[in-house]
Image (cartoon, rainbow, N blue to C red; front, side, top):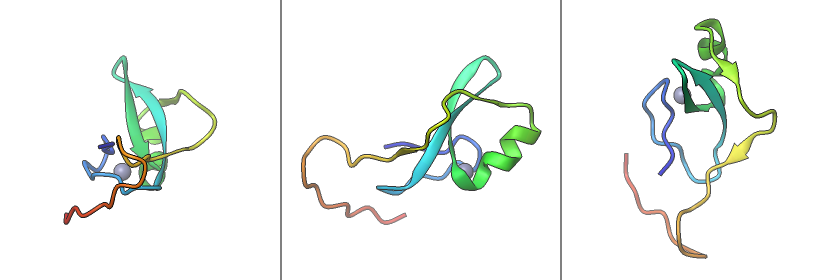
Length: 66
Ligand SMILES: [Zn+2]
C-alpha cells in the first residue's frame, strides 16, 4: 500500500500522489501535503500525478478500515 510520507496516511485506492525527493530519498506525497513538502525544500521528481493502484488482483475489494 502506498503511504504519504508527510502525513503518514495510507493513501486510498485511486487517490492521486506524486513522488518528491528530499533528504536524498524519493518519497510518496499525497496531493494535500505537496505545499508543505515544497516549503520544506523537497523537489518534485515527476510532473504527472500517479494514482494508487489496488495491489495485485484485478478486481480486489478494498476492505481496509483506517
Ligand atoms: Zn499527505
